[in-house]
Amino acid sequence: MIPALALILCFQLFGEMVSRGLGLPLPGPVIGLVVLIVAGMLRPGIIDFLRPAARGLLSHLSLFFVPAGVGIVAHLRLFSHNALGITAALTLSTILAIAVGAVTFSVVANLLGNKADD
Amino acid sequence: MTSPAQIWSYLSQEPLLWLTMTLIAYAIGDWCFRISDRQSWVNPVLIAMILLGLLLEVTGTDYATYFEGAQFVHFMLGPATVCLGLPLYENLDRVRKAAAPLAAALVAGSVTAIVSVLMIAKFFDLGPVMMASLAPKSTTAPVAIGISESLGGEPTITAALVILTGIFGAIIVTPLLNLLGVRDWRARGFSVGVAAHGIGTARAFQVNETAGAFASMGMGMNAVLTAIIAPLILSLFS
Image (cartoon, rainbow over all chains, first blue to last red):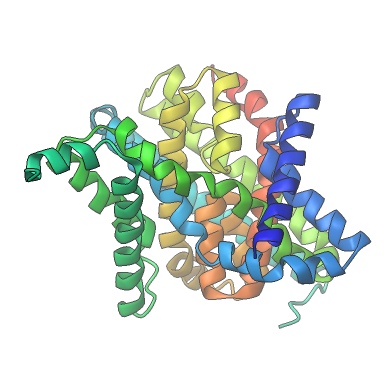
């Protein structure tokens, strides 16, 4: 567990160094994600080593958003001032983006005969 | 003997109290989600946020004090994001096979998310700072904050908008795509990853492993694409 967690943090650390060193718009953890995949392609054993710790973290992914989410309380006054506009913008745009993305995926997959395999 | 007031004044300044409260609030949210038979509208993050928000209000605690304790949970977002590479790696063959629909859905979903939110914000006359803060609302929080800052937005407002978007996306995705008759788990997962980042991805994993893997892919790819196109699209609105 602890060695696996250390390796995961090393991927993130490497990602931060690349992100800051090269001034990339991508944050360190997203680069760390890519490094994890590349490491797995080079040495599949790494994935088996990481799997239990990684599964554990992923099963609580939504917990990690709670502290930032509570920050909304600090902005309640600003948000209530523009409540209608912000609510309309967030909800309608999210509905449209999910619908357009999912329908585009399905239509292109059907056109190319690219079937789901499960 | 120490009075309750003295104990409180000690505890309320220590990280332990708010770290514990964050875990308890989430455990309650998760319990509600389970007993509701895993209904998407019973969102554990939303429940935890409301409980903690009320608790901060009642005890007169400010957000900075709360965050002293909660930062340990917040920190885990980074390593958890790295771990999203695992389901992606395990589904690499299927991702490769679906390259064309993935690319098409990424561009369509990402552009729709940015253009539509800016059109509605413009209609309601929300002002340039709010528009810059809204533009990256579908991307994962650390990327969105970076994009928003470079566009003249406000980082803390952006973080709040990103989380609200994620929660709403996670709640709406199942009924919305059932209504539209989209049954392909790849399409369902990928679109919610693009539109509602990590919280949408967490929801996708709750429903289906394939959907979760494609949601992680959508989240990661949209982080890159939005960083590139959000400044261009925003400049069309100013």
